[in-house]
Amino acid sequence: MTDLTDQVVIVSGASRGIGRAVALLLALQGAKVVAVARSEDELTELTRKTQGLSIVADVADETDAQHVIDETLRHYGQLDILICNAGVGSFNNLEQFGAAEWDRMFDTNVKGTFLLCKAAVPHFKAQKKGHIIGIASDVSKRTFAHGTAYGASKYAQDALLGSLRKEVRPHGIKVSTIYPGLVDTYFNDTTPGSAEAEKTHLRPVDIAQAVRYVLEAPPHVVVDELMLHPLTQEW
Image (tube, rainbow, N blue to C red):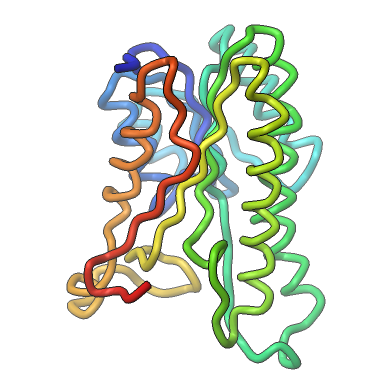
């Protein structure tokens, strides 16, 4: 089992939902957490609990993404794990989507993952180790009505991570993709905690526990892909 004590972990989209739960759980395991999001107030509150570092950044901006990696290395002198969790989604008939909304989803879900990985991989290659985890979605593996833009972005993110896995494996770098089903978060502008969601959705901490499981695999083991669903969700 890999010990997470003093491992430096970047978590994007850390201010709410899955990212927040991941940051809190890994901090409890002794990791040094770098929380990244666009909301300074929520990051400040989170960092009080993790005792780590917070960086306000838009991961879809190349300068910001590079700054996240550079500032982490400057502050801690190391980087061991990158968790690409930042994501957005909205759902509608294809003809009712505007180009700006399409771009928003691809910028965050795909470009954000690309830019963070692009900035981190040279460091991981130099040290001949590292672990990248992408929080994708079960819709990376299926399609559904009203999900043209979101589904397309998640298929693209999945393809990016899958190709990267093959590129960096010879350098001792692990790439894992986690595919959650329905999760009770603020996703799509919903408010978590409803009685119905309590019965039918995963909790953010469930995904955080999956991240922990993947990271704690022995050094010679890589969990390439892991899918989670609530028992009530058909697949």
